[in-house]
Amino acid sequence: MFRSVPFAAGDEQRGSHAFPSNHPADVRTADLELAARCRAGDADAFEELYRLHARRLYSLAVRMIGSADEAEDVLQEVFLQAHRKLAGFRGESTLGTWLYRLTMNHCLDHLRGRQAKISRATASLDEDGAAEPVAPAPVVPSAISRMDLERAIELLPAGSKAAFLLHDVEGFEHREIAEILGISEGTSKSQVHKARMKLRVLLSR
Amino acid sequence: MSCERYDDLIDDYVDGTRAADRPGDARLAAFESHLAGCARCQALVADFTSIREAASALDEHVPPTRLWAQIAGALEEKPRAFSVWIPLAVAASLALVLAGSAWLALRQSPTGDAAQQVTATPDETSVPPAEAQYEQAIAGLQQLADERNAVLDPATRAVLQRNLAAIDRAIDESRAALADEPSSAVAQDSLLDALDTKVALLQDTVALAAEDVNQ
Image 1 (cartoon, chains in turn brown, blue):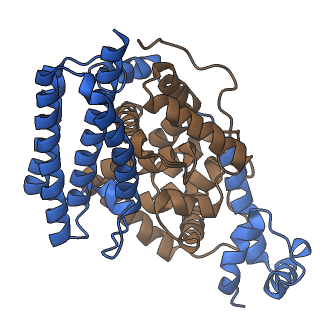
Image 2 (cartoon, chains in turn yellow, red; image 1 turned 45 degrees about the vertical axis):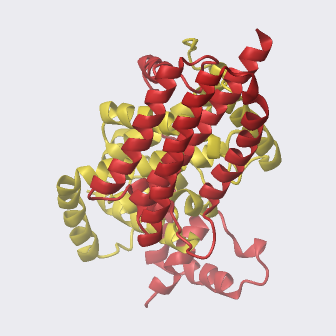
Image 3 (cartoon, helix red, strand yellow; image 1 turned 180 degrees about the vertical axis):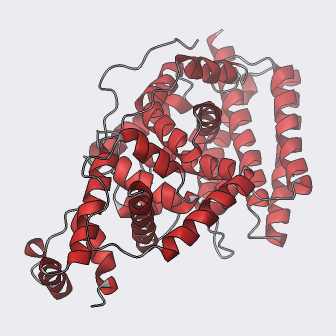
């Protein structure tokens, strides 16, 4: 039977033990043990998996999709798929990376479903970005408001938004982003650069 | 002066890479010399740094507590992984519906699963890793099931055998479809779903046999 357990304070912090940049051997051992417990039918183990990762994945989904309600639906699909596919998890990547990959794939699928709307937003951004001269003097306020940044991120095209969120918000390295998104490290760097350039334009207005 | 050639290094610099840490990197050293006298690059570094710092300080969004309740509820409706005992009728229906759905999805879905499209790397000369993992799991479970299912009553064994045969047909059909279209994400997903169903049914067989032994 599943229990309802609230998130413990400090369960998840950026750069914490659950992710591959830190203590990879410990993380992988813990991941394999947790995955094995889940596969063996230990309901508490799957709840532990959820509590370890849900906040960060939910934050990512909210920012990727731009809607808390839709992110909730996406995250539910992610964890149901994770439960279904845990039988195939063998620890080649960490559970965190694996779950980020599932989440990103679901978010990108979701965004493709809203293609017309997104296309309009990205088309106008692309044109603006291409025409914008690079200003010699700093144009972004040194203290950027959280709301302004959240709104600007929402307007990024899906590809550069995904790379930017993983790199600058979640703190992943480019090699990890490449694994999560199924792209090369060079493409990850290029997408983060494009995102920063567009944000620079958006935040200077 | 054209300094776009250093754009890739601007991001590295903002992310903390310094020439002092890379003694052999002449290009990075040249960029740092260039940066000292270039207002354009200095402006980019300042702006990117502000953006990076603000992004890393963004608050986390906290999922509503109802989300776990919804997930747990949905999982409890799927009894196979979290229940030792599954009534055979339910197991049979589940297995057949899943196998049938996988095949119908393969036949009817006009678009691929984008999630798989992003990560799938079809290789016609070798077994894909996910499929290999399933086959490894199935081989182990099949051996356990073969060793233990003698304790089950004949009627139960017959139902399980019929279900396994149905799933094996679905696997064969998915493999045939994948052979015709190796890059089809839908075919790939259907095959993995069918393999997943077989793993679940074998797990149930082993669990049922264990229960009968303990009774």
